Image: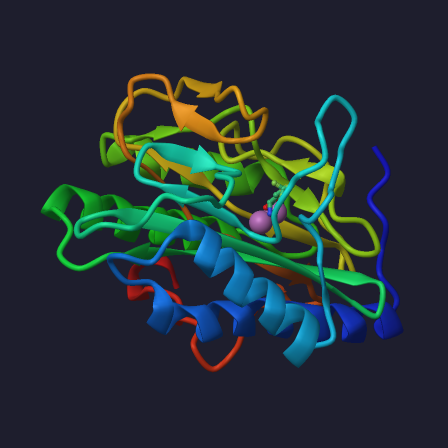
Length: 266
Ligand code: MF3
Ligand code: CO
Ligand code: CO
């Protein structure tokens, strides 16, 4: 595993890409209402990225080995969908929870971020899952410091999530990011403290826990992309792109509409 250290110039470009990705979520937030289809959300985000931001939507035609090219510009994962939900004709309905995952390329660099949205009035259980998952992401991010271990992130997330009675998805993880969408290292959202590579200033990776209300097992739908929970329990995810700094961390996917970190994780 070789984790590349970004130069100051690359870091500045990653700050810009990160802000732009987060601004797509700010832009789309008011449209996330009962009745809109995920295909319409995709089209709105696509046009905003391309025409307003001068960005390339990284998911469109993205084809890691073993996968068919991803057909849309964003991921929309509803209720028991874990991640990589492919936008289509399905309309959002009252009580749904939906993750919108945005990755832009600006000036050759990627910014990757996702948030949960609650459509109308969701159940207490659905809202709690979204909140605990947000806390999981921040508890993981707060482990990040130079000299620390990559494994500290997943260990902290797993402990917190399982303590709340939830489970952590194993098959998908955070990732290094820069000129490539997915680079080393893999950032697991479970594991043991003081394991894995040591963190160094200039590393950039995502923290993006997928947390299930039921069991951890997942399966892939026949579309070759959409991942769902095997037991059809609800799943939630939040994602930030984060820089390791000399003193700790800097979240790169921030914009006017980003939520600040919860008090308990600070
Ligand atoms: N944005 C996702 C991530 O956080 C990856 C989506 S790949 C796609 O890593 F092709 F489905 F868009
Ligand atoms: Co990611
Ligand atoms: Co993402």
